Image (tube, rainbow, N blue to C red):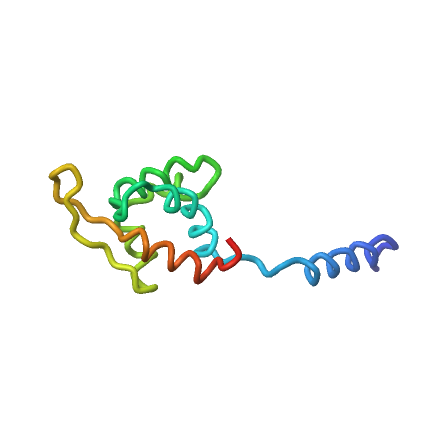
Length: 113
């Protein structure tokens, strides 16, 4: 037997689920998280280590607890056609990403922001 207040709860839940925008995928949430960093990065190429460092600094996000690495970053981006490139910031050979490619990916998945 269902309690009298149950119908009200079910109706409220139905309204919330139908009126709210669709939930973002984990990948879209990731892009939303990195967007401020990518937009504000001063150079046209972003070293993987800098992006990973930023992701790990997000205290309330799950990446911090998974020991997020450059490999994880590459695994997220590669299926979307974004591949790391060899770069030489400050005379060192490192892997990184073209800022324009990351911004293009962000705008594709998050056109409103």
